[in-house]
Image (cartoon, rainbow, N blue to C red):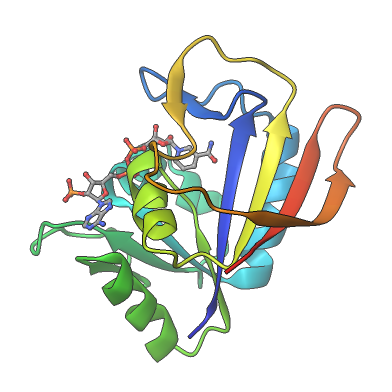
Length: 174
Ligand SMILES: NC(=O)c1ccc[n+]([C@@H]2O[C@H](COP(=O)([O-])OP(=O)(O)OC[C@H]3O[C@@H](n4cnc5c(N)ncnc54)[C@H](OP(=O)(O)O)[C@@H]3O)[C@@H](O)[C@H]2O)c1
């Protein structure tokens, strides 16, 4: 089973996008010093169908490594991805099977709220990495939906990526 790393950019108050799905409070520095290095290192990521569509619409995959393996989680069996390296899965477990079959030792869980909640509630996450933008966003979607139980974490590292941006690393206590 690959190591499952929950990786997100967030406002200080735990929001990942605005209510209209805009992420314009996430800085270019976060993309350059946070997102790109970790995606290039891990080389596989799992995301919800909505996040995938947002990333395709804004051509974000053009700026990522062409061999990046992406699993899109959706209940739609006939959902069409835009690239041969992008496959679909109908559940978190099936998404992890896809990553395992390809031989990846680690994978990123990269949003959005609904997909994150599925993985966290099923206790499938090993590590949490969050880039925290210096802003309290007025309203938007949370890192994850409300849970029935707490998830205890152990702090592993804090990195200062720029003057304004920090990255926190936690291990999930199981
Ligand atoms: N700040 C950041 O780092 C960051 C990162 C990623 C995303 N985002 C933002 O997050 C927003 C999208 O979040 P969202 O919560 O609306 O959507 P989402 O989690 O990206 O996608 C939700 C969809 O994924 C599928 N899905 C999720 N869990 C599933 C499960 N357990 N089994 C089967 N299918 C499942 C379903 O697709 P179907 O409806 O097709 O069945 C569901 O409707 C976007 O605005 C994006 O920009 C921000």
